Amino acid sequence: EPVVAIVVAAGSGSRLGASVPKALVLLDGVALVRRCVDNLAEAGVERVVVTIPAGFEDDFAGALQGADTQVTCVVGGGRRQDSVRLGLRALGHLPGTTLVLVHDAARPLVPAVVVGRVLQALRDGAVAVVPTLPVVDSIRRSAAGTSSVVDRSRLRAVQTPQGFRLDELVRGHTHIELAGLEVTDDAAACEALGLPVVLVEGHRHALKITEPVDMLLAAAILAAEGT
Ligand code: CTP
Ligand code: MG
Image (cartoon, rainbow, N blue to C red):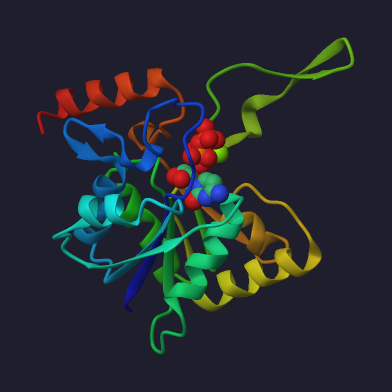
């Protein structure tokens, strides 16, 4: 089954605070967005739509030049979910294509084994698949000057790439748009339709670059891998 992907890269990266949009920041000389596209191409993804911030068309074209898969850039929207919706629209109708991965450009070091687990679960019949990890910190819920402990044993932190049957992801995003719902990931859009979400094991290397310390960690991971 052909697999396509959306890489969401339209954010500014305000918490990272770099002088360029986060997806263009270099990690050991290679832009985060390029690392993501290369990882997906390596996994056999045939076509990638990248959502980008307006005004950076040439920069993204340069960063993605020569990638080993078919890449299209499209300007994203105000929220992540708007960018995914615009990315799905840019993918268009793809007869015969049934599987789609949605990936954060901010996760440049996802191991191939994680992409493999997501695709395998889809091929085993899942509609929506999410890589997750147990939460390592103790968690408290805080409210109005008080707080209470939360049992973390059943909590999971969610990563990307998330994988979907393409038609169901389109249906999910159409639904949340019409219903005015806000979601922070794409599985939540499918869940809003009542579809089941399958969890697979994620990986610490799939960390999201959010703050400057995350760049230090990613650089150390790369150095340890010797690539
Ligand atoms: N994203 C997007 N469109 C948006 C907002 C976010 O495509 N309107 C993408 C980002 O480019 C990123 C991913 O969604 O790859 C996860 O978002 P986040 O880590 O929050 O990135 P930013 O929104 O860029 O960072 P910040 O919130 O610190 O500004
Ligand atoms: Mg953000």
